[in-house]
Length: 201
Image (cartoon, rainbow, N blue to C red; front, side):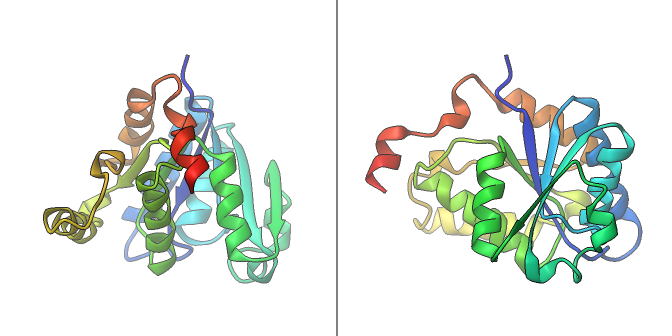
């Protein structure tokens, strides 16, 4: 039985250039719903964030939005937030990220900006420290993450990625291939993390 029930998606609150990224967001959302999984995301109703959420909802999937109070009217509208199945309002970004981690069994980075990079890098850091073994995916739409992946390879080659076997993100080039890749990677007990290491943190 799969350990995956909820997938966290990090992505831009802007649409990016053209329709490619928005369509990827909608496609991923539909895929999450069609596999009977729940979307956990940052609560925004604009840009790629909004596309993932609307794709999930339109396909009959469940959506949990987690958003800091100060971003409610910047990344979303209150009326749109009311349409989510679950809404969690946090006091700051730290609470938001921790709650997203707790609610999710896998993490996906679609194209986005500095905030998206910060979120997925933190999840990779926690993996390196043994905090979790949940699947991590770079949704490499149109090669968007190639510079990031090159940097990670460079850090690894130069000896700065310690316990590198714990930091092995999946790279998937198409939005509809992301969920199947996560389900293939997930094994019973994989998401539990190394309790011995966690206790030492």
